[in-house]
Length: 309
Image 1 (cartoon, one colour):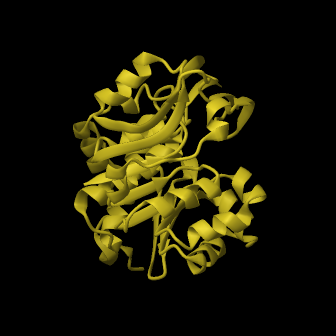
Image 2: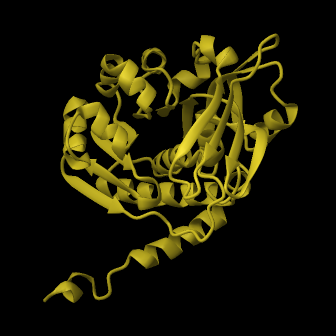
């Protein structure tokens, strides 16, 4: 099994109440690839400049991520982003965005990538997402993410993407903005009418929920005593979610519930370090151990019989 991911590869400079880092590896494709590699084989499609650090390239290769689809523009500069988080980590301010080579990015899937059973489209321009969907050959499962920039600027194209994917990741405020509905549950219902069979709402420290026509599954976040940097948590949530589905090879309601648990656990590790410092050194055994602990937290004593009044 394998997943092809198309997205950004970025050098991030991040400041949080707990410190700051400069030019660390980030971007939706990087975060997703590192986290998904804990579950399955990953094929990355993106672009970097000639200034992209050799150490970061080696780090990605060390996770057995296929970089055949990572274009290097020797004379160009890599996408850079600088941001700062508020004291409670719930708000982030973008201080500087330099698209550089990413501004002209046009995804080109190597032939071997086109037959990947699962495709994930990071929060890139919907026009590029449609381009990728035209290149993949009958994938078993497709998923995409987005952001408010594309919602406000290219809503029509984004709706075209939604008609062609199976699963849509989006956060709660963006879902309301995209659908013009008064609350997130009505927003999900409308999103399901637009095309995807499954919608996953990311709610940060408040958890997530998965909705289909016949299922609603709500899940809290894993409780963390220490959050150093939440950058990339949404991308790694998607990676854990899709990585698990690819690993088990099926997409039913029970598998989606378990996928949400693994997405939650992977995202929790991401938040414990700057950039990829934590999730980049997390093991399958650690993921499994924390998932078991999390499931025990969710158990209702006595099951349904214990809820009788």
